[in-house]
Every structure is written in C-alpha cells, then in structure tokens.
Amino acid sequence: QVQLVESGGGLVQAGGSLRLSCAASGRTFTSYVMGWFRQAPGKEREFVGGIRWSSGSTYYADSVKGRFTISRENAKNTMYLQMNSLKPEDTAVYYCAADSRRFVITSSPRNYPYWGQGTQVIVSS
Image (cartoon, rainbow, N blue to C red; front, top):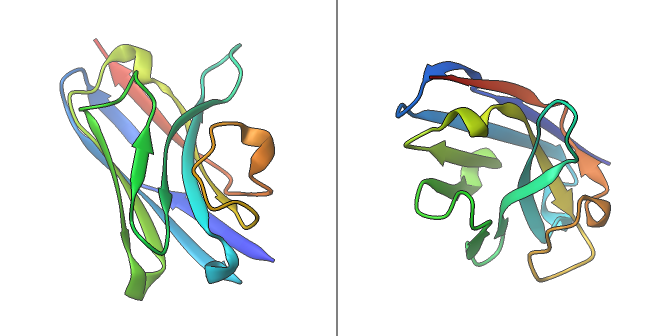
C-alpha cells in the first residue's frame, strides 16, 4: 500500500558526509512514523532513527546521535537522513520504513510493515 524508494548511497571517506533520501508514494500519510534502519553483513538490522510525520519530532540511536539528522519535506513526500562525520562502522545497507499503527517512534524492525529496497553506504578509512 505504501511504496518507499531510497537513494543517495555511495562510497565516502571517513569523516565525510552523505544525504540519503526516501521518497514515499501510495498511502503515504497513513504512516504515522517513518524510520531509518541499517544492516551490515552478518549483523541484524538495527534502528538508526525515526520521525513522526505530522509533528516532525525525531529520535536517534545513541550510535548516531549528534552526527545524523532526520528531516522531511512534506510537499515532496520525502524523508532525509543527513549523515555527517561518517565512520567505517557506519558501513551498511540503509533502509527506510513506515509504521501506520503507532504514534511513537519505535526501534524494532518488526513494527514497520513497509520497507524500501535499501541503498548501500560504504565508509572507507
């Protein structure tokens, strides 16, 4: 019912920056919360941060707090992840996701029924 497409991934040196985009279509505004997750090879998918669509309030994992910023552009139905001061341990496939049932930002991937295909981020040292 909701389609999500990520873009903006690529290769960057440690200390550099990238901005990821997540374009939503379909029943976009039935999703109360949207989030960013990442998954490195051999690791479980982990929560990066999320945003309440109506208010714009955000919440971040401790590992990225102070370095990453989530924002939205309502007119374009697009969510962004600005990543600064990137570290090699940030290397992962980054996914955007949507939750239409909860008003609070949650960290479990199981709470998000809608997912994009992912975009690769590689941070070299």
